Length: 454
Ligand SMILES: Nc1ncnc2c1ncn2[C@@H]1O[C@H](COP(=O)(O)OP(=O)(O)O)[C@@H](O)[C@H]1O
Ligand SMILES: O=P(O)(O)OC[C@H]1O[C@](O)(CO)[C@@H](O)[C@@H]1O
Ligand SMILES: [Mg+2]
Image (cartoon, rainbow, N blue to C red; front, side, top):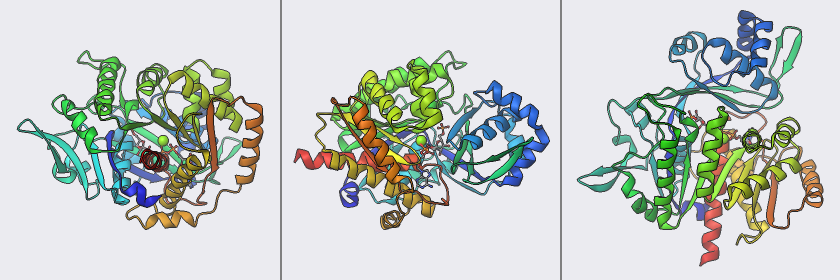
């Protein structure tokens, strides 16, 4: 499968940033609790702030994420807080972030034949974090030029830095009398959402060349819509950018290529609904994690089902929820990644067999396991490392529950495939593992479709 995937050409856009990563230590978490006070933190958790305006918002949402062990991302909207973060935390490492940034570097690491990456802002410090071999589209003398991305930077473009707080299963700390133990490893993302950097768009001069870019690739992976704001001070709004984003997809699809959208959590319910209802119906494939599927069902009006998924993580609820999303937003294939299993839901007439779909999911989890073990994928051989990672200890349970769900749910119109994940006990880092899974599953999906069309 790796060889077929490496024979592909791909385009990825929009969001790329610098990820400043903090590997959380229990004593640091305990220090935050002691300095803000357990009662104050509990009160703030109840309030459930959807944006970080002041330190207590961050501490409350972080503690809540640690308690659930679920991957979360919360916007930072107050630029004054840079100083507080930089005084309070020591960053263990900096690396490329943003779905488009991570996915471009992953594909270049695998030596995929051709990787074109686009992000609206490309300051020097960000350009340097991209791997060798990635091309960036620019317009020169009215023509499309693909330049090595490290050389295509623009002085003066704003730099976006997100803060990533990696947490590990088993971490323990006390919130007042309550002893909290983190149930799963994962990451908490503080996403910088300032107006100067919250533009997700193809620059107007480049947009007319999207069909030409589409003709040069086998597929496109788009993401970053979560970075939009509902309002901008220049009078533009989310609707303006979403109309442009829809145009981009239509232009790319003139070349009749498959387009995948990698979803990310959108705290603002209005924006979340706009993104899923505007963008999902135009693309072929969508990827998301188990928290995000619940969030989407909630804004589609299925709040009880959303709560059940968020609380109990039952496969049958995820399948039911996935079928609803696929049906209501009407696209080709949904891929959901969770801690214990990956799932495809697609239509009965999908040209791929369930065995082929399972192989595609296995490629995705193996790639993520390699990245979780190594911290990054820098060469194709790294993939082999993923093959040595065992399937998680709940694999049999997952298969049993899936068989049960198949009997209970009417799935006649759908093909539903579930495979257990290869889970690395103590991952080097988890940020970007979902992006990795979705890249592996989407590229192998296209490679398998290509075989059928021969
Ligand atoms: N330790 C691990 N080993 C292997 N896979 C993992 C591990 N931890 C998480 N994953 C996989 O990565 C996924 C995380 O996806 P997601 O939350 O979308 O991450 P991101 O958005 O940061 O890429 C999980 O659903 C799981 O399938
Ligand atoms: O939503 P934003 O600000 O574009 O950030 C996306 C975040 O998600 C990730 O791409 C992981 O999926 C991080 O690398 C990045 O910080
Ligand atoms: Mg994700």
